[in-house]
Length: 117
Length: 116
Image 1 (cartoon, each protein chain N blue to C red):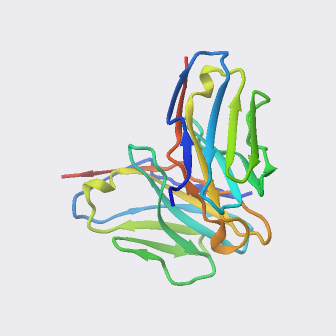
Image 2: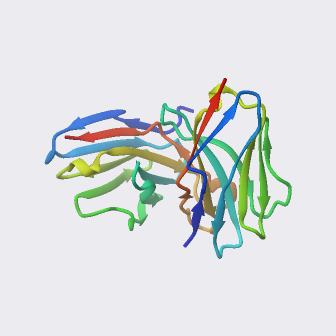
């Protein structure tokens, strides 16, 4: 079984600043994906960024980037130039990749990010 | 593509009533997932289907909960009888299915259930 831990229940950042959200995971799987999802007040689950475990290069999507440390089982999210619209709950999630069958996501408990003026 | 469609978006019911939540996955997706989100327990997987067959229902809390997927384009999650502790947001998600990037899940907008 997998576990995903987000140790920061709440964080705050000023507009235009940079913030890093932490996530660690535990697994015996060798092939997997990691995700960060954003959940704004509308409740919609929005995929922010994905990282394939076999790729050493850290994923980047515009202002969002990750620091993936496979040996340490760490997967942090960096948001640069924070915007008010980034205010949301952020969930780290783990997905094992199994051949021939679908697999299930395991979510962390989330980090509530508030972007302030 | 319209994305994953869930109905209703909001449901308010009284304890003891039957509740049916509906989900239409993205066309062509072979796997469907039902999640529940509460403040206390976060996001929990209740059940998931692959090619309309339930694969893992270990997250279904009790016999009051049941889920069906009669065809590739429709699934229901039923609670009978409902209780106040069932109040939560219920998400449906779908994915292409097995193998690599095909496992990525796309979420519907959720159904907010309130049981009085």
